[in-house]
Length: 461
Ligand code: FES
Ligand SMILES: [Fe+2]
Image (cartoon, rainbow, N blue to C red):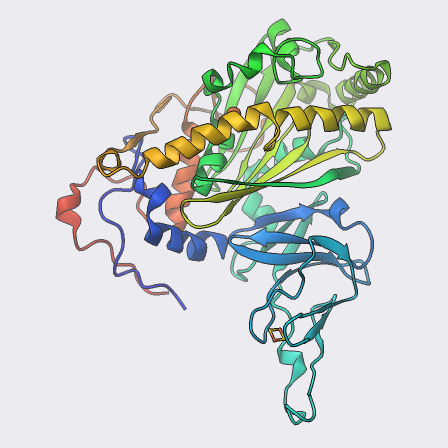
C-alpha cells in the first residue's frame, strides 16, 4: 500500500539548479517516513560480506533500513536474507548477533523456521489449529540477494533492476575496491566483528560526507598532527607520503543517474613504491611485493588509486584499510553506523595485526578521525533543526558548471564526471538520485513556500 502523499512537503527541498538544499530533508518526520518507503524498501542495501558466514548454517544479524534481518548461508551453501520477524506476532526469531544453526525458534510461542526460511514447526498445530494452518504460506519473509565479489546486497522490491544494473558505471570503481592489494581478485576476510555505534544525526550526513567531501580536513587538523598511519610520518592515511611525492589528480567521480560516487587519485605517471608500513619488515615486504605485482597486472590502470565512495543510498566503501560503513536510519534524528573491516585472507598474520591496530586508532568510536566526523554531523543535525536556522537552505554549489566528462583518462569507467581538486558534484549527484526516488523535482526554480501551501500531490501507484 502506498503512503498518503496529499500532505507533502512545502517549498523547494532540493534545488540543484542553484545548488541549494533545504535543511528539512534531514529533520522532517514525513520526509523520513517517505524515505523508508521510497528508498529503503526499494534499493539494494548492503547486508554483509560472505566471510562473515563462511560455513554452511552460519548466520549473522544485519539491518535493512530500520529492520533487523538474518543473513545466513543455508545447509546447501546458498545465501539468504530474511526479515528477522516472526510471522505470528513479530517477535525476533533470532536474538544472537551471530551463530550457526539449522533452525530459528521464536522465543515467544515457539514457531520454528528452518535455515531455508520454511515454517517447520508450530506448537498445537493439531489441538489448537486443527491442522488447518498451511505452514507453507507462513515462512520467513525473504529478500532478493546478490553477492558482488563477496560483498552481499539485498533488496525487498521485485521491480528494482538487478544489482549490476543498479550499480551502473560504479562497477569500475567497485571492482578496483574489490581487488586485493596485488591487483587480483581473491578472498577478503572481515575481521574483529562489526563496529556499531549511534550518532545523533540524520543518516544522510555520513552518506554524503563519504560520497565526496574532500575539503573537511580542517576538522581533522589535530589528528593530522599525530602519527596515526602505519607509514610512520604525520597523518592518518597510508597514501599521504605517496601523494606528497607524486603529482596526482584528486578526483571526485559521480555516476549518474544512479547517484553512486567515488573518490580517488590518478597519478600523472608511474611511481616507485614508497615505504608505507614501517612497523615491521614482513609487512613492508608484503605490500611492496603486492605493489609490484599490481603494476605489472594492471599497467596504465594501476595509476588509479581509489579512496572510497558511497553506493546509494547508505553504504560507504573505503580503501586504505578495506571497510564498508553502513548508515542505518533510526528515525530522522539518529543514525546507527555499522562498520566492518577486511584484510586479504591469505596475508601473513603480521599484516592483519598491523591493519587491525591501524583501524582501532583511526576509525569507529575509539578512532581519532571518526570522532571528529561524529562531532561535525551531530552538530550539523542540531543546526538543521533550529526555528530560525531551518528557514535558510544549505549551499551545495561548489564546482557547479565546472564538471568535466570522462576526464582525464577515458578508461575511468563509462559516463563519469570528474573535476580537478574539490567540488560538491558528488553530493549533487547523490541528492539528484535521492530526489528522483522521493518523486521530488530536483531542478526547479526557487519557489516561494508561501505560494505552495497545497503541496505536491503525487499520483498513487
Ligand atoms: S511471536 Fe513468534 S511464535 Fe508467537
Ligand atoms: Fe572525516
